[in-house]
Amino acid sequence: MANKQGKTLFVCGECGHESAKWLGKCPACGSWNTMVEAATIAGKPACGGIAGYTQAISLHEVETDAAQRVSCGMPELDRVLGGGVVRGSTVLLGGDPGIGKSTLLMQAAARLAACGRVLYVTGEESAAQLRMRAARLGVEQDMLILAQTDLSCVESEAQRLNPDFLIIDSIQTMFCADIPSAAGSVSQVREATAILTRYAKSTACAVFIVGHVTKEGALAGPRLLEHMVDTVLYFEGDRHDAYRLLRAVKNRFGSTDEIGVFEMRDTGMAEISDPSRLFLTGTHAAGCCVTCAMEGTRPMLAEVQALLSPTAYSNPRRMATGVDGNRLALLLAVLEKKADLRLCDKDVYINVVGGLRINERACDLAVAMCVASALLNIALPPDMAVLGELSLTGEVRAVSRMDKRVQECARLGFNRVLLPTGKDVKPPKGMTLLEARTLSDALRTQL
Image 1: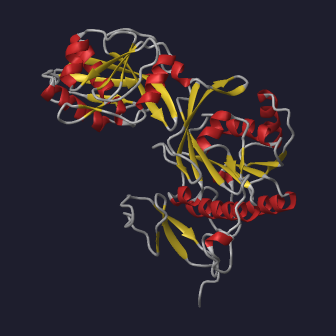
Image 2: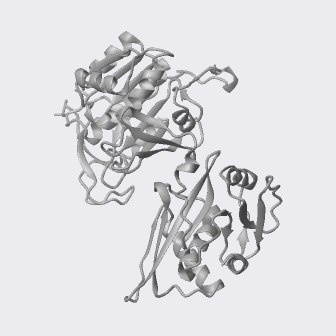
Image 3: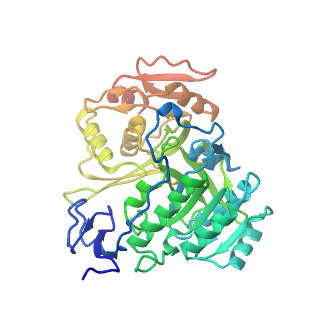
């Protein structure tokens, strides 16, 4: 006799791959010990689809809403979202415990309440606790609060109230009665996200979902969770530090290169509109170099610091914080081969001040210059910024949007910029452009 309760499947917690039997290694993503038992209901798919047209229509017949974006009232959050929240979109916000996810969403909900009805669903706190948080943050706008973990009750209440914005805090606490597993399991998280996504698309309600992260820093639950939503935001930073970075790793309605900078205060999250000054310490010691990185459309000055120490071991350490470790190893090899600097007997430590992470190659020359400065114990000029990419031949190559980077350096008081030769850049008034064709030329003229 067929099982009326459905059949048991094993789902990979990393990629969502389903298998009829347990496997030690997932055949899809290759992860070990990630297969978790999950049950499906007979005759019902594991995930609901997105509501839409039942028949195919012409692309030109599809109606679009010209005013689909709504400002959150927080410029830094709007920047990361691509100009505001899109109606009918699903936004997933992840971060470490205590990083400030609920605080940020409470402040955003207070500002969104002026544009429409907000329903805040909490599964981790009581309504009284949420009211105390609102009072601490100075939230005066009224909103609807629902302390509930049963997703069927949440969905029915949302259909009755028809809110413009729905906030779920958090997705790991929501459970579907039709899924015979504990809240927070792979099947529960996947089904709950599917229901919320379907509700957002069918009602044009913008849904914000709070997600927990694992100890590795990835969002807890199946990897499929990130594919189901429209936007994935990560709230980064040290919980013992005051500054937070909001970074978009997926955005169907905007760029994924933008970041927002916040400061945790007693009154909540304060936006940092000029983060370039935040990441500059003003230190003029050997091993320090200032560069300009582009985060989306925003130029941000960052200070790179290097520390070298002799090692007694055959394999010296190379440790980088804020810079890709593989890229650092490549730059050290170029320094040894093309600049004749002996680094094989030195431990090399690189740090980007303020917890900023630099991913672009426009900061290659700055990293190489600060390593050479630390090795020779000669400080770089305090009013100089360094821009440029390094090739394996030791050539300094041009980078994109050089004019915008130079303008930002001039705005913050830097009078000299070291950049690649041949780049047609008009220097601002009072600024001197120093050109270098190779890494050896840069080192010879500045150190």
